[in-house]
Image (cartoon, rainbow, N blue to C red):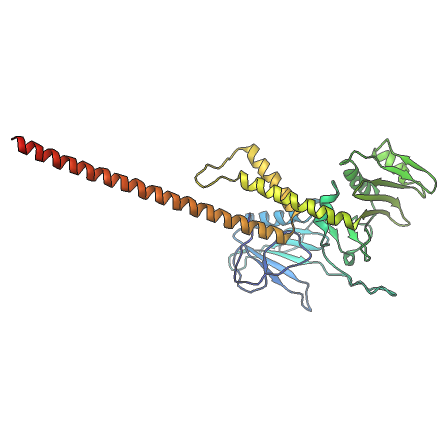
Length: 365
């Protein structure tokens, strides 16, 4: 479903600090429910405006954008004079202004100030910022991950965010809170039948007791790490000097192979969604069970498809729906024309018969 207003003749802008929020435009023709992009200036970072009809609509849009970008667990509520429903995240803050602008409620998404990362030595690789291009693919490969993967330019220590390192060889995250680190690790392991193992330089032991208490005892032993491995990826959790570290290794070939599976699943999900929609003339199913089924399909599709793919899916879906309704109404017009023609012919036949009967009656008189 298209939540944000589209404008075919306006230039779209892509930003790498938002996930699944589009289309975004760079023109100055402000209108409700359309996303307007303002580039970075000397005074402030880039930001996006969204005009809403009232506060309830503004809150609904904010909550939806938060859901698409990691969920409420990844955002922190803030109090700031002049603002309401204000939240802060890794890459941006979002809220609405209390003061109306041209009788509309203004929602603003502002990019957090970027840290300038400098490459040292012979490392001449480009430093990338924002959300990693394969973030959604990685989440489709690793069940239970449920976290945005960022580019290396966003890397900070201690918060538990996931980053592709600058070489692109693996994903790394640093945790101050071991409880949250183990919670993330368990979320992944609990999604698979395989067991994790504890390792040091000489011993590898399968972990039978996967309780938080036992994992904490293992990880607090100097030199030990916990490792979990499947055919698709490997994760290890260990204790560093100042924080706990989680490394995730995914074979590049797996990303390519999984891409085929991802595209096939997207096609399958879209077909199910289209099939579940009523055809022209049919009645919509409003049951609670059916709504949950549709929501589940939509959520999985949005988690697998990129922004560009979703735009194309919705475009084709809208085009096919229009063609189906055009055909339906055209067929109805033909049927209605035929019905009226038959009525007309029947009336003419009745007139003819009445006329014939009249002549016959007159003849006998």
